[in-house]
Length: 631
Image (cartoon, rainbow, N blue to C red; front, top):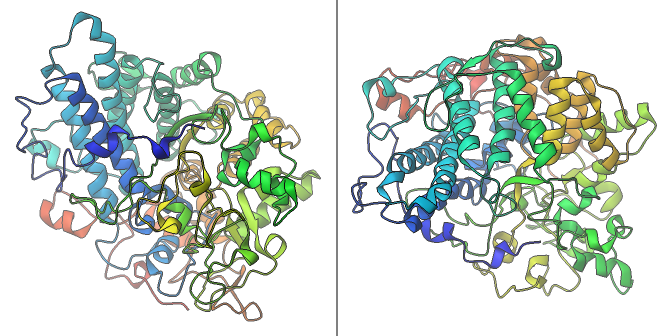
């Protein structure tokens, strides 16, 4: 495992290189003391620009996850998680019920993503301010390719959140760029063109666990973006059998092919398999921090607690061993974290704690305030957190039904979820808990040790090279597990979904120890859900399998509505169970009304004076769109 948490990454010094994205339409973010006439002047300046581009992901992934972490949001919005948390945790519950508390609730990622787009566009435009030598051509192309790739990635996330938005590809904002662009016909061709530029400009030396994109990362995201476009916007249905028209691309450096076809998308994925050098970790548990060798050692010595679930692992497969954990052999692209957070980081973004993987706190066990005060005697080896985004009954029940029908046990279920009644029998719910299902997230769970001095400590404090928490609050600050954005199993499952060839999916099934199956769309859908639960993919998978304007009988609408009627625990009383009900109408209706898009910030709509329109399903005067207290 690479010790990212202790390294002085360039991203830290570059986090405030550009301090404000404003609203991207009114202000040129490069008009600072350092202008594009003199910056970048050397290679190190371009590297700093890239670090600033990547740091947007840290800002989204650290700190207030319920306010800006979009990958966490998409799990909450899916049928994998409830909103839950305490009675006062209304933001996360509004996300889960697809309603809003205020007209600007979802503004933060809108601003952050446009800030990243501005930074990437600046880097693209000014790359040749540097007097590149002939022997630096490859490096120049790599850095330019990364900037193109990241701009495409930020636009992908922006459109998946908000749909039609302004398409800005220059630091000189034209009147046309201020207008809302059609995502299907204008923005997705730009996204795919940026990814293709990245693919053709980048090499393969970077990107293997170092936090950078490379050619293979671009090929993987070409497939992900194209599949969403084809499934959601083109209503292509089952992609293995679909005949999707070629997409006309934007001509720019690195992208001169004119059109993108399904065959070229498949070819890119095949290139990753044949030449990328990625491979599945032998043990699925190796991907997650609860399999660290320190906890494994405690399980073997029988002197204190013993976490039985990892006791049978080979120690070489533990999270912190070479080739495992952060930077492992199947990790293509990720958000990285390090021990450099602070309670306040300068700049206009909500950037505090941005270098700590804060989903570990939000998904952590809600056992701090009154019930157990983080007592590891009752929760070992897991630690306390906010208890938001509780796994739904649906993910456990659907998975168990699949196991029962197939007469097998899927290791990934217990490797991904904590079954509180059976794994933590002494666990006590908080008195202000709500929407508790009996399960908790294990993948990114906070982990403690007998060797730790305090209940709110984390295992990272005992890892090699650790000197002290940058926040002096280990429960909130010491979380350095990569958040995966693309793993090799995704490449394999996308190939099966696009080609109908089950051999790629079978590799994922074999690693999980489940029966190998032939191709069917349902089999692919299930494998994607089981493999990537809590990794931020489920909601947009559901959307592309449904198609745009598909109504209340779509795959997504029916899956979300299946949450209704499930038994939940509220206010900490297991004997007084309630049934899960939608806050204002039904999940099926809210999904059908919105197509899964969130409300655009009203401040942006007002400033644009008619050039930006609110998404359907978000009329603030309609009570079905507004948060309502349930508990």
